[in-house]
Length: 229
Image (tube, rainbow, N blue to C red):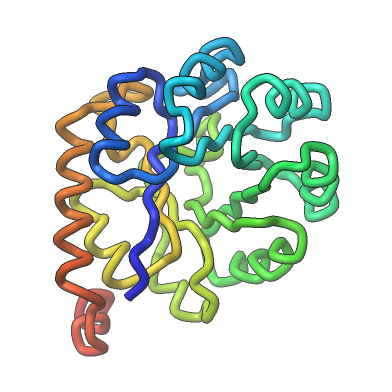
């Protein structure tokens, strides 16, 4: 089983960044979207990006950002990855890649089997793919809602080169690792004590459960069927 990398998204303080990195997190995410409780200004991201240094990948999450915003983020924050978490089309993803010269990760909302076709539509233009649960009705943010989709749908996806997001927390990460076996895991609200406020204790519990899941290995076919019956 491939050991997935873990990205903790929506980080806002140096202390929480240090906790994530001390536990082996290889990617940190900063959100630049004003409606989100995890929103950071460009200045705050510059400061936190400097704190990370070269210890982990830095991803900046945007939602339908225009060219001016993307250029500002690229030149001033200097992220390793730009995450597009809005309604960007495949053509727009290609434009952003050319505009920024930065690794681009496209988030694809999943609610049912029909949504899986979007994965192959975006693979040719996105460097990375993130699969997240479609935002529940009434939510004003596209991600970080603490809900998951039916991970059993991913049995139909042969290529596991994607990052799984949505509803991953200390209680569900074992299932994500052993059942889904994605290339990466993205966690935000699952390690928060309230929206936008990370919790060191939950971060430690998440990584403890992750390490235990890696040690246990993938589920066998019988366990997979029973778990998702």
